[in-house]
Length: 361
Image (cartoon, rainbow, N blue to C red; front, top):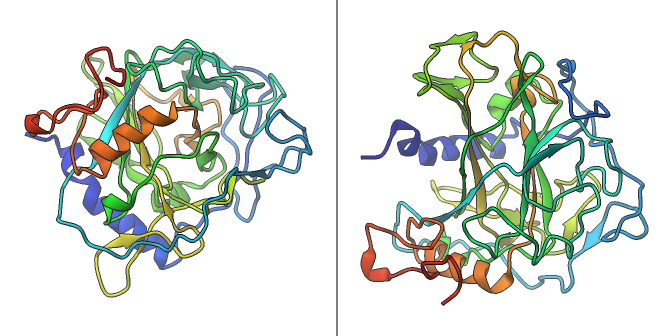
């Protein structure tokens, strides 16, 4: 039987997407920095800000203008309005463990070590100097060796104590649009920031990526951390947050690290979702499911970026192209609920995309 947390996302995503269509929860972006991997005081919430744009040249952005064109660009695509046979699931998991922490952010502050607030990273070789080419072929703690992608969030603290997630975290890759058969793999080098470290509590709640906010035991929909939780080993602080899954087909990154991607919109007159016309390429929707072993008195719990509603995360794609294509085709396009091998235990007849060593057969 699925948990409550697994039964609700479809309804919640639809509500969030409708909110996006109606114009609520539309966010600009910003970044803050502490200059070290240490806790930061909560920033004041503000609106109308923009993501700080780095003018630092990097290996992927030699002129430092923040725009990284896709080569080749994807053109001639129109958003799919098709409605394939309903399948409740169309996803696969990437199980990733935390590898290190650092005040680095190769998306917002490329080539500038120590400039970011502290991040908890899942990506063995990820640092401020990471480029499209550098992670590929490196060591990885991921179950799937071909996933050299980097994923990171602001570090979480209880007072001055850094709290790290324990074990492999679930990072789902699923369809965010009704026509799951239209989803294609990420382009190599795609990167983006999900959420906004400067968003207000209301902005966090209305964000189209919001699922159930901060969860702790039976407490859901929290925009900040609950004041207290039972001091038991089985009680953890959880967060689920979904990324945009529509791409403009033109850029791997833009100056605000978000404009080249978009959330799906509701197809007029229906409950179906589709990509908007200016971001017509459907990609896998990433959903972070992070669990932090912290409980008891929660009054001193905060993120390196500030309050609980400052939560955000970054993604930098460095999947092996062939492996990602196999998983997307078998699991997302195939309408299956796959583990990291690309195997759906409820449909054993479909087989797995990868072998027992989590590699292409």
